[in-house]
Structures are given as structure tokens and as C-alpha cells.
Amino acid sequence: MRIAIASDHAAFELKAELRDWLMEEGHEVADLGPDTPDSVDYPDFGYRLANVIADGTAQRGIALCGSGLGISMSVNRHPALRCALVSEPLSARLAREHNDANCLAIGARLTGTDMAKACVAAFLATEFAAGRHQRRVDKLSDPQIEDRS
Image: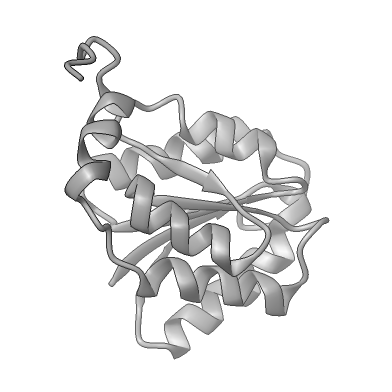
């Protein structure tokens, strides 16, 4: 799978650990930065990540910052993105299964490396269930869709 990963300075080390682990697992990984642990603005990297997922360059994304909140908000500003902030594997699995999340956000200051790997593994291993969930997911990208129930 083609996976893009981006962070801010607070998650620089976790990004490097997850990038290397994902490559060891056989995934193609695009590291979108930053390239140093110097202070950066998380929206710049969140927007960069959103664009490569939306244009199909990557199939899934991993967004990291100190809490996971800021970068997930920036990623979710793109209408084609569904970025789920998680801290444990069940939420990561449900984000894919029920919400067709195409990006996962994790807070590096709140989630350890082993738990982050477990979240990413659950996210990547889970398929979207579609069915009854599809209508709701469609509304996430197009709020003009009327409720027909």
C-alpha cells in the first residue's frame, strides 16, 4: 500500500519510527516532512498530506502532531479527506470499517510508539464495510446531500 506520513516538530521522532516500521512491513511510504525537529506549523503538513491522498498519490495517510488534534483538523479541511484521531486500535478499526477513514491521526505526546503501531496496523488491515455506512460517508464529503430517510 502507498502511505503518506507527515508530522509537526512534536511528532518528528514518532514519524521516523512509524515510517521505518511501515517500510519494514512492505509498504511504500512517502515522508512529507518535516525533515528536521525544528519548529514548524502543523497546518502546512496537514494540507500537504491531504493533497497527496486526495489526488491518489497515496492510498492512506498518517498525520502526527503533539496531540493529534491540530493536524487532524487541518487534514479534515479538505472535503475528500476523512481523518480520524485515535489513541487505541478499536477506534482505528472502526474509523475504517464505519467511516471509510483515509487518514489516521495520532498524538505523539499522548500515545506511545507500540500503541501507535497497533493503531496503524488496525487501520491498514480493516476494509470499509460500505452498506448502511455508505450514505453517511457520502454526506461527509458533500453536506448538500439531503436526508432521504
